[in-house]
Structure formats: structure tokens, C-alpha cells
Image 1 (cartoon, rainbow, N blue to C red):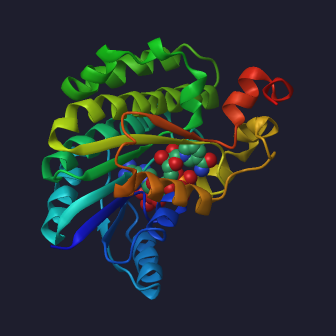
Image 2: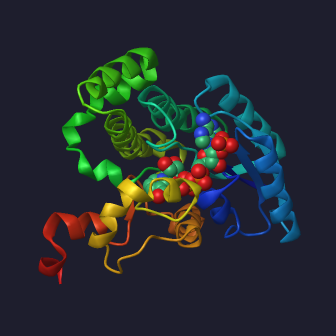
Length: 276
Ligand SMILES: NC(=O)c1ccc[n+]([C@@H]2O[C@H](COP(=O)([O-])OP(=O)(O)OC[C@H]3O[C@@H](n4cnc5c(N)ncnc54)[C@H](OP(=O)(O)O)[C@@H]3O)[C@@H](O)[C@H]2O)c1
């Protein structure tokens, strides 16, 4: 049976870059909301010698994700899921950020864990924005609420965001909360799915020169001074990092977040001069 690698948000950016790093024996499924973008990306992969398929899916919609998981399983053994679908503060209002980034991750992890077998892996993409918030802001109760009462989860975090002045700032807080959620939810899933042999890990990029990263370069660019090399990351670097985490040979890397931000978080926290 052929192995299948599903990449949400795979039509562009680091998701597409990750696809280019996957072994060519795997069938690649690229998903996102914009069909033309997916078709273009699939053609690009086919030209490189991959078998790739587009699948239109909005990860914030449970039914849409369920169909994608069933479709992927009909193609073969779903071995790798890279969940790179996401929106940033400049792209969406707080509610959509919570629905896509946070609840989308619940939908993907839950629906794919139903069709995945032992030896498979889910990599959820978070952000180094998760590290600006203290852990208690997204506690265990919020993780459970997102599964059991998603509307209540959205209402609770929207109330919090409404306390912050400024539209961009409200979205910024919603983004950070949603990405903190991704790290902690992926960790919870690692232990929930461990018995089934499904490994779960998350990756938190810093500012990366994708369409999204370029859009956020004004505000996000303030962090670049704290990176070791004073630069943005490239989609190719992050694509490689994602593919590495999704590689079966990394089988003991589980239940953690991997911070791939060029050193920005620690450079800011401790001061670059004190770090070296
Ligand atoms: N670039 C950065 O600086 C940066 C930093 C930290 C974290 N991240 C995270 O990295 C991930 C990848 O982003 P990127 O930088 O590669 O940007 P990107 O090129 O904009 O990729 C994001 C992809 O997600 C898809 N998407 C958005 N909403 C979706 C939804 N509801 N359902 C399904 N797909 C959806 C988009 O396609 P459609 O619009 O066609 O659906 C797009 O192809 C995101 O989760 C992002 O939050 C990025």
C-alpha cells in the first residue's frame, strides 16, 4: 500500500516547501481553500516527479476535514500530516483566527487520528508568538473546551481579545492565543494518540519570508533584531524543518514544540549580548 502525506495549507509557503522535501515514493495531498492555488502547486510537484493531488478544504469546518481524511485514506496509508493551514493578524479578525488556527487544529488532529495507523505522525504548525504569552493563558480547561464546546471556546477568547485596544492588537492577541493553543493541544494529542502509535509534535516558526510573513514584516520585523543572524527565515528552511519532524526516522521526537525562529525568542528574553 502506498504511503500518503497530507499537507494542509500546502498550496503555498512553508507547507508547499515541505512537500518538495518529502520522499517521492509518497502520494502528496495538498489542501487549502483556493483551488487554483492548489492546482498550480500540484503541477509544480508533478513536474518534479511527485504524485500529488489537490483537495479543497477549509480546516475550520469539521465536515470538510472529515472528507479530506477519508479521501486521503482512500489513496493509501496516511503516514504524515503536516498541518500548516493558518491565518495571521493582518489577514483576519480575532474570531476567524481562533476558528482556523485553533479549532482547525482540533479538527485536523481528531479527524486524521481516526484514519492513521501506528508509525504515523502529525506535525502542527504554531508560531513563536505562542512564546510571548504565559502558559496559564491557555490552560487544560481551554483545550478540553475547544473539543467539547468549540463555540464556548471562541466566546471565551473573544472576550479576552476585546479588552485590548486597537484592531491589529486584538487580532495579534487572538493569533498569539491560537498559536499557544496549537503548541499545548499538540502536546496533549501526543499523549492521547501515543497508544495508537501516532506521534504528534509542533513547530513554531519565527518570521519567514512567505506571503504571510511578508505581510507581517512591519510588526513582526521588530523581532528580527533579536535573531542570531538578523534575518527572516526562508520557506525552504522551514519546509525542510517540517519534513524532518515528519520523517519516521525522527520517531522519538514527540510531545514537544520545536522553536525554529532564528533565535529570536531567546535573543529577546535574555538579551543577545548575554546569550553569547
Ligand atoms: N510566515 C511566517 O512568518 C509565519 C510565522 C509563524 C507561523 N507561521 C505559520 O506557518 C503556517 C504556514 O504559513 P505560511 O507562512 O507558509 O503562509 P502562507 O503561504 O499564507 O500559507 C498558509 C496557507 O494556509 C492556507 N489556509 C488559510 N486558511 C485556511 C483554512 N481555513 N483552511 C485551509 N487552509 C487555509 C492558505 O491557503 P488558502 O488561503 O487558499 O486557504 C495558505 O496556502 C501558518 O500556520 C502560519 O500561521 C507563519
